[in-house]
Image 1 (cartoon, rainbow, N blue to C red):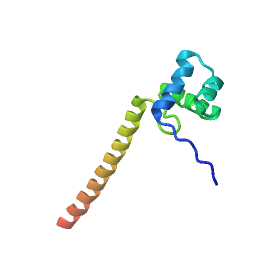
Image 2 (image 1 turned 135 degrees about the vertical axis):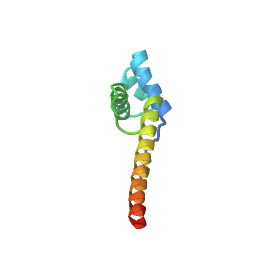
Image 3 (image 1 turned 120 degrees about the horizontal axis):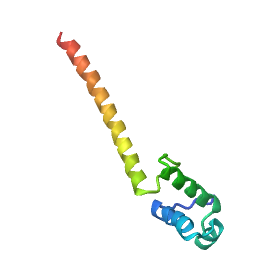
Image 4 (image 1 turned 30 degrees about the horizontal axis):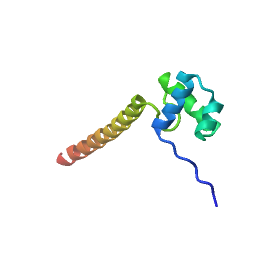
Amino acid sequence: MAKQRKQFDSILKLEVVRMIKEQGLSVMNVSQSMDIGVTAIRRWLKQYEDEQKGGRGIGNPLSAEQQRIRQLEQENQQLRMDVSILKKASAFFARELK
């Protein structure tokens, strides 16, 4: 039987990162006390640092600001596709009217 991966929400990830960054706790200490893998915590730290530098990071965004940016990027992409479709449709119907 395969072992299931644990799922962690963004709030917990951000809290773990803050424990390490602001309280000065070690990755190993937090890992043992919260029963979370060291590799996962290091990945969250890297993602957080990337987000703070303005990058996209990996995986789901941790901060609310980055979550909002991703949402707006997706919305922007959808709107661009809609405009493209409308341009093609209007060109098609303009040719049909001639």
